[in-house]
Length: 66
Image (cartoon, rainbow, N blue to C red; front, side, top):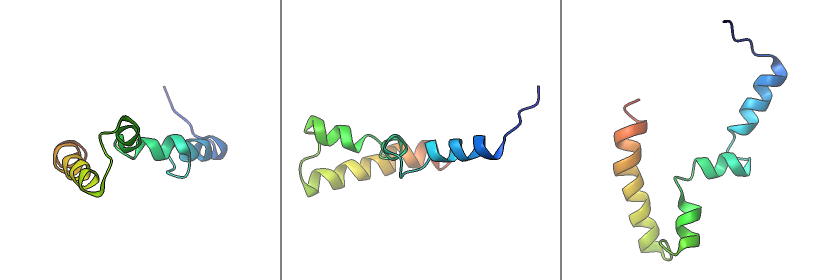
């Protein structure tokens, strides 16, 4: 089965993965928006701790090795 991509189809795919699109930006945030809404992140110190945790546990062990 061949998968073909038209210029229009590629443009739509790139729009969905763009950080400019609210859905795309939310996907790249590692859940920070929800953490703020839930009250888990409510200060500079808690934001720093959240980002350190994401870098250490999520990015370094999953995304970067791939």
